[in-house]
Figure 1: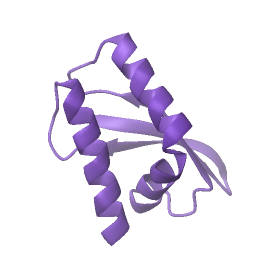
Figure 2: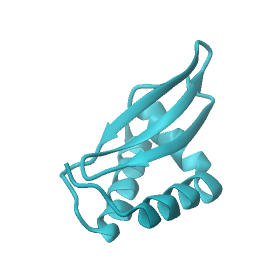
Figure 3: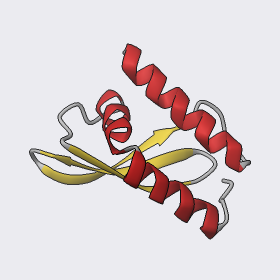
Length: 90
């Protein structure tokens, strides 16, 4: 599994959690946490993104796979956008 440098992970997580919290909620609701009221992205790697979701039953971790394994920073954005677009039509 590919891992990204810590500075890349930190920047992506900060951006997602500060600027795209609503988008994260859309993604997690369509990918296994339909009753989520909050979502916070906590990890990324070459295979998936991971969020901590808050549901009526409490917090839990949800890992959502990318459409294909990735190795470049620019591919992270592409995959998150794709997850969001797919979530909107599901």
